[in-house]
Image (tube, rainbow, N blue to C red; front, top):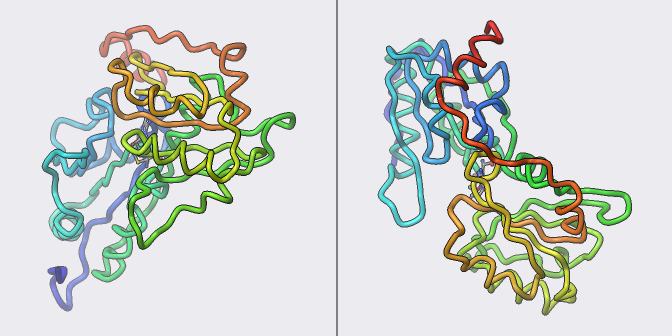
Length: 273
Ligand code: SAH
């Protein structure tokens, strides 16, 4: 789809590509908060938590463009076009994404279309799901005794044009964090085990990490499909695979408790931002 822009004219507005973090409103950066408070229009994804959406000023236009497996959502081309159109008609356009916009967030693709249309932009990073989950589930992603590296991979592993590097991921000194992998849990565990990763490798699936509904499902790599099929598991959920998961019990500090939205707002107001 060709993007419509106005030849000879520069869009007056600017697009802010902002990471909203994994859920807990307090994990929003101060910069993201400031940008959001100045927004005239906000295009947001399904993963952005309600507590964060509640921070958008009343007068700002709110547009849901979220994608969720199986549910209708705006196509990427439509989102790109909408961003460009809004930049011509609004001053501060915020493109708000869950986690970090440059990690499995298509942020790069959206910015490329802004470049093509000569629209100005800035990027505000967010705490990616891997970091939020790791912290709130008590699982350090690296540790001198257990893991010398960490890889963030997508679990959309059925795309033939982009084969998975099972050999590399099977390295037992490396922690593997799998985004969007729940539906492919069996392919992931079989791929890793058949390339030499030990079936007893500890794994954790963490759902709704950093929110009051966070849940952890802990087991072994050979049990990954059973863990993923647990009826109590809610989306979104992330997998952490590797020896570091052994620490999950001793380092578990987060006890999700419901916080009333009014309490969250008064805490933020108290920050005086
Ligand atoms: N840009 C986002 C990732 C988008 S891909 C980021 O940086 O975090 C969407 C995937 O992220 C989900 O399928 C899930 O695997 C993971 N995810 C996002 N938020 C999560 C959360 N609060 N808890 C667990 N997993 C989460």
